[in-house]
Image (cartoon, rainbow, N blue to C red; front, side, top):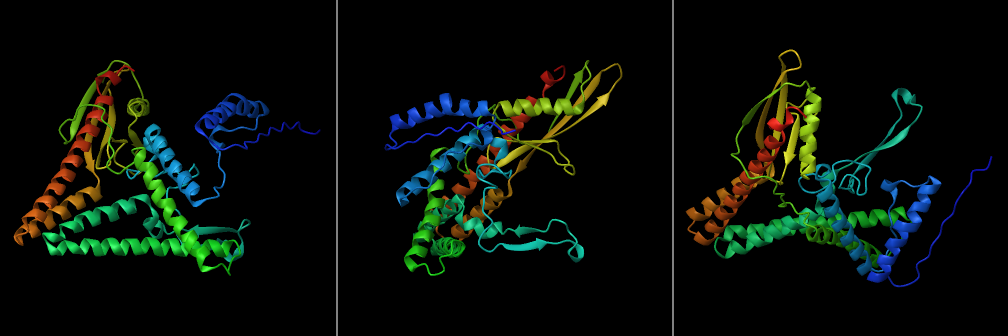
Length: 374
């Protein structure tokens, strides 16, 4: 029996102007995709319209669009992104958010004495090696350059420019290694220096373009979502009496659903964690929830919840470092540098407290008395 095959083809030969792009989108949504669905050969999660760009400017524009698309995805599915804005689950549009790096090593799994029936190649990735190409790396370089300007008040801060230079050299080195590796992959061992330089620039340009697109979409490390008025950033306990019986898992799913409806980043605790749910409104802090149920017979229950703040390590360490540098500048008599550094430390600390307060407010409201008889 020969399976029936429906072949659909289309060709776009004009320059992609806004009107043509809108017409192409209408064609895909109204005609092409429904036809594919009818054949049973369509999966919404697998459809990607992509083609190779022929110019450096076109490639940069494409990567900028990818960064903006990441920002749109984060707004809709914040729970699937890390605080820095990278995908935390594999196998989707942008993989795990960071490449394996040029210094990754591989090994072949053959089993004991070569007895494994399926001997596969496994790659041990080096994510730290790929860090210099992450969009946030350039933000860190920019921050160091800005702090280095204060060297006119306190010369010790000129060191920030040296650190920024080292970070820039690291990015250039990693990009160069990747370029040479890709030239070898395509069998161009004899590639010219111009080829290597162009590919190195494309690697760097890709990272910068993604940063521009992500920033345009609001996907920056200091992003936040305002949901409910903040409350005191301390441990909160809630007791909730119910005349109807519900499993603890159902109550936790109800809390999780309320948080997801508010477009918050929600994460479940693992099998060894001493918390059940974590909610995040910003990147500087989050709130965690732990719940239990007391059985009182005849379907009556007392639900007890405990919520507490959790501060991210990097902002706290950064605030402490800025405060320490500000104190040292004050001792040295550099009042301008001391004032700016201490003010930056205060801003980071206040922002962390605000993120913790808003996350606690959202998670305690979701686990409030209205959950009892749902």
